[in-house]
Image (cartoon, rainbow, N blue to C red; front, side, top):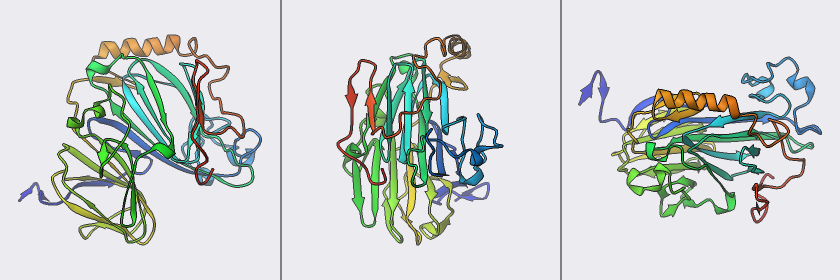
Length: 345
């Protein structure tokens, strides 16, 4: 059976480039994947001056010398910015993120940790990528996924949770490992905030990162989810049921189909995002996703009026001191730390 020349029996419904930014489907809003080959850091945990001289600092996405500074001017990363009306799941698989926010929280996470932010209401933070090692390069690989909130969860209190790499549920198969960040996969269930669309299993939300050894075969069974998307962010020579899969590609696949992803001759990284749409009419602009245009305009004005006034830190681009271990220090003085170091730290 075909429709406008497309074979609707194909497992792959759409195949498109997915490099730094990924197209997503409801309930997901947006996703980004950054890999940067940062050099050894200086005393400021920043690149040497001769490698950032001449860049458009404050908005550098050109990957000169194999890395971008993004919106950072000293340490790479994203200085003070807002979120309102959705969730942000941040996974730095390599490297660190230094985090300060408008609630008074601060900390460092990385090397497989997960930060799950539920920003139902106005929230500001800065996320910097410190070059902590001065005796070796500082590669960073960071994936960030924005998951929408239903209207009933808009303007609810902000919640922040770090899940340390040691506590992320993992499933294993023949030549592959699956880190489960949302939903349940192969009997492993991830942490999910109570107000999240992902909290109800009936919504079939699943976020999984697969790492596959050369030649590994990953069978995927049919799902009840409305949307299913795969993102190959590292690897070459892979295929699905004999059809070649290019590196840095997004594959919208049939959720009701069983198929096998066959890896090529190098270690690969593959992400799976699936779920049912929220399906509610909403309005969005910039960092705000709310119910109506009026609400969005009012929210943007509030951000402009209050962003700096409510910022409790002396700078908008703070990094933790060199040597800071992974951990989260909350405004009430309480601290959370993982049990030990991860490989690569």
